[in-house]
Image (cartoon, rainbow, N blue to C red; front, side, top):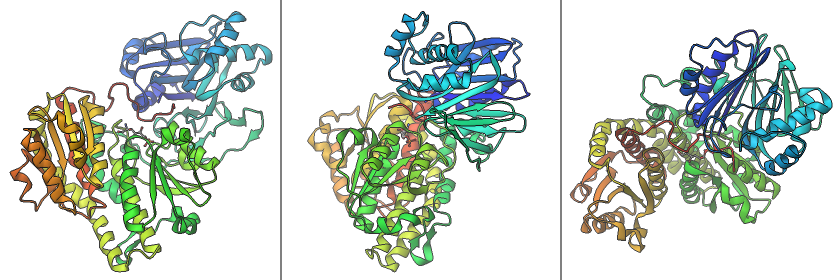
Length: 610
Ligand code: M6R
């Protein structure tokens, strides 16, 4: 959701904070603001993007060695100048920036107004700064005041607080929203995401829920909100700055689509043992016995990661013969799921910070299941909150529409399925070798799909003005259809639905006419002929068909209006290749319609509120 960044040291904090905000903008782009302390408190904030804030500041000479900055994804209060962060207290002394939601803010607001506070905005965040002001009166120490205030708060927060009365400190706290502290030499930084820190330091400390930190130039003191001192370990960030840049591509999404041969390779590297027909996943070793002997696996996630889970179910059930259930993480905890101690729950998340997925993780743990992670961001809350797990190693994903994380999640789920199939004796070594070789060939197959980019652009010209799209597929290509439809919706704002191809005749067929483009994912697998029949049904009703079909298919072209060719794979792994043209179709459609691909309206990269 929102991005937050703070700096204390000897440099001018403003350029540093603005650069940090630019890197965090994918987390929210409704408004941006900074608060600086240099004698007094200077606040500049503006609705819109970080560039609008930069324009507002213009040539103004602002210099301060302590500052905080925020880029907002609005929850309470419309995205305008007034509701933009930072917010400040009655005396213009304390400033706060916040990522999360203060759930009991109406109760707190009433109490604060009764004791004379003037609250200027409708945001939940402003209430918190007045509460801190109230506590500050009692203890005259910002660190303590923040702690005391947070004891009264219900909800989620990652906050930074500064005060002109203690101009040598930034107070940071977290519950539910990430806070990472970057340790420097004579300077310290803090942010919601390592992306804002990496240019300055690789040494980081992750705050946990219920922890508060006091940063000065030379020190970081950490406590729980109940005043117990804690010693935090310093970790190292391993990825590079270039990985966060666009590298010559027009958008992060396009760059990330093109990175997939490498990112998939990275998910397989050192794990896939082609000659032995099996897989080695060190992260799962501590729980391997439980995993191999379980009678039930649950996969839970949101959005694109949920689509990966749907494919994962088919992979694991088919290859390892373990029953698998898939749940939206946002539904899981509210349906009072029945869990046994022998159940394995995998939570899948690119960011590792999704609030709904985090809530599902906690619920599964509370109910005694073994909870494992399939996560991209190393050191993220979900990665740290699970008993064991597998990193997908896709590298930083900045584009709001997830692409390379999806294919790497599938590469990891495919490996888990193969490993369990072998360990449970369901797959012979020969079959294991064939499957492993097929997985190993996928990065090259993905590369081949890029040779059809010009054709995809041509197809986009035909369809860029339509209002609706249908995506149809069967088996593991039904989730692929869902993913294709989600990509199109997210970035081009065209209404799109994914359906199992055979379900079309039970309702959606009523929508088919000459204005309805239908994307069929129709590889030559066991249900190929059935899907061809579904295509005929669309054709008979004048629907226009774009088919994603294998290179050696000679039948599809007689039915479809356009055919995009993809190399063949085993059906279990097919979605990893078949989704690539769908990502490109959505991308070029959004570009042709003039949409902001990397920052689609109303969305944020990481959804850290429930
Ligand atoms: O970081 P996560 O994988 O937990 O995120 C889950 C969803 O919010 C995410 O996949 C979202 O649906 C993307 N915008 C899809 O492109």
